[in-house]
Length: 226
Image 1: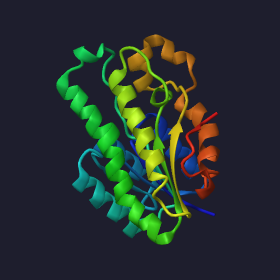
Image 2 (image 1 turned 90 degrees about the vertical axis):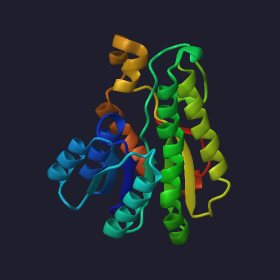
Image 3 (image 1 turned 30 degrees about the horizontal axis):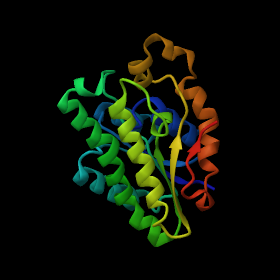
């Protein structure tokens, strides 16, 4: 059965690999990113049966308007994947630029909140749906020079696990560690050694069926893509 799947941050990396995998399996996608050119290209590539729009998830008015459009055009949502995130350049915490820190909080934490808030009322009304907030290994551990990113992903874990205690039985909120994948974000941390890890396309071969298998029974579980 075809599902309506929402993916944020789908212009590149994990988000792009996921939407391609879902579409190949016949599912309907509503996706967003801040890159208007890529959203136009995806619309051109995949047609009007999917809904791609430029959205800055740190702006609540944009998120809520987009979510309303998704629901009006595509109907109730089966799976929401809160994927959009950034990372600050490697640095000791006290050396991080104030604006870069603020931007990270706005996207990685506030963006998660706004997207959850935008789609949850419909899911609760339908008593159906899975909400996946992308966390990280650094949402469950720590490392030097990535304190701000760790902070944001620990926040995702806490918010999602608490939210899981609030949603009704038919709905699930799940924090998901995707594992270590060769993305531009990973290159920011690991440099050239990032290439030692699987590409987003390789990762999606396992991640797509894994995500499609999630149900309300997984509510609150801190999961990891194998």
